[in-house]
Length: 308
Image (cartoon, rainbow, N blue to C red; front, side, top):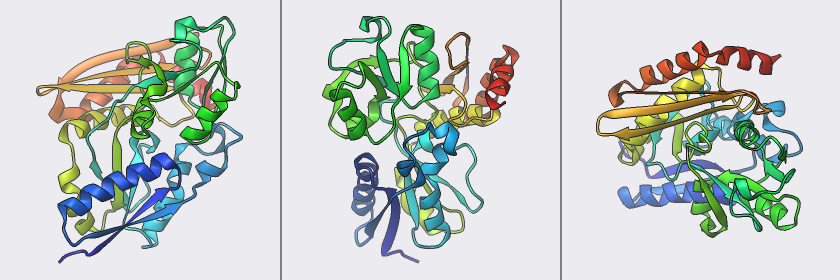
């Protein structure tokens, strides 16, 4: 059985469209005769911009409409930034491919300052992420961290309009949009632990449609899948969502996976970290172990306080 048309649900933001087009072009090159159609959609997460995601339903708001389209049969697949994908997906849907990861770290973007250390006392920094806020506050308790939401271009425009001294963005998004020249400092994992799955693209589809899974199989990156699986397992074990400041970053060397995890208070007053290595073939177990190491240090108390 062959498929002649594959419909990809995607958000309408320029970055989301780039990601969907990136997948479309690869699939059409792999499968001559296959037509891939994009179904751009506006999601709740794109519309509810005045409040932190943690207060309006989490990053899953970027997926809800796309997932409904798949479950209704209007779309066959969706392309997501893995950092936006919750640990648990709706019944009937699953990740059928995780692609090779782009740069996973965060980026410091400013028109006037070269790095975090160069910011003046009390400078205003924009981010929508509790994870970034926690780590920024730990590094520089004096900074004024304020909410910054909207697509990439909107965030950069607000920086250029002088609303912020600096903003923190995902490095990969700037790269994909050809905006890497805006980056003043690459925030390596020793400075700021990235978000779970950051830099990787995931393909979500109905679990009862094996044909889609077979079409995307050549796009699967085993190394990235192992890393992201470890990170997502850690997040799920800790009840991860955008309402809790959790960071996780895995790297693979040979057959060994090394996973760093972070949980902290949003005021930066307490930041817990843990790092362990294990076989890449046992990525889920490594995620559990690092999560348990964080819990042993008191991570559950921090997370419980945030949920009150």
